[in-house]
Amino acid sequence: MDTFADYILAEKNLASKMEIVYYLSKKENIFFDKSVVLKTELARLFLRYSKLELDENLVLTACLLCNCKKIENLKKIEDIKTYAKDGADYLERLGFDKRFCKICEEVNRYSGSSLREKESDVLELVEQFGGMILDRPERIGFKPDEALVLLIHSNLKNQNNRYIEIFSQFIDMLEEINMGEFVEVKALKRLTKIFNETEELTDFIKKIVNNYEVQIDNLIAKKYKEIKNEMFEEERNKRPLFTEETTKKIIGNIEKQKQIITNQEVV
Image: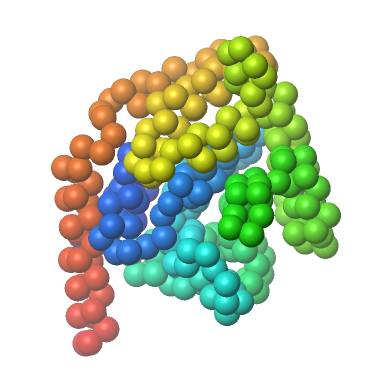
């Protein structure tokens, strides 16, 4: 029988993946909020810009799920140190292989996992940078250049992240793109503005997928004089977001899979 992991990895459309995780979060009470969507969009753009030889489907799926056991407004250091490992263990129970779970576990470095996976370095960058540019109860979000300085010289100081220099160039590139019609609005400022002005998670997903992605992809293509890849828009229009029918069927298989695992453990 196919597992939840098989279903979501077989779905190549990012918007549909978000829909699946949204319903999983309702069913299983896992962590999935606007910040996860924003960080996943950063990862999508980074992979597209940098053209790293990585499996985009794998990385973006991991972005959506690596924080599944995160607790909102984490305060206890014990919870901060264990949520990624707890999440990896949970994902293994949903049918993901050990390498995928290891990638998710390595979104931070608290578990002490060694010989880091390449994909984990991408997750680490978007997780930390994305978190810094967003407002928190105790502080306002950092400006992109400030966040980059903190990322390089504080958070990842003395840490070996394969893609830190490429990521820095990527952020510099985004800061050169104007997304305003009448006044200058940088790409990252537009992204955080949509984040702050949109309350509902489903509305945020729709605005990112249907508006922000279309505009930023066009502007990046124009900036680098690339031939625009129409697949992004074609895939978006294949089916509407949040139709529920297919997704609910997929989520329903979670209970069956968990029951099989429980029976195996009893035996």
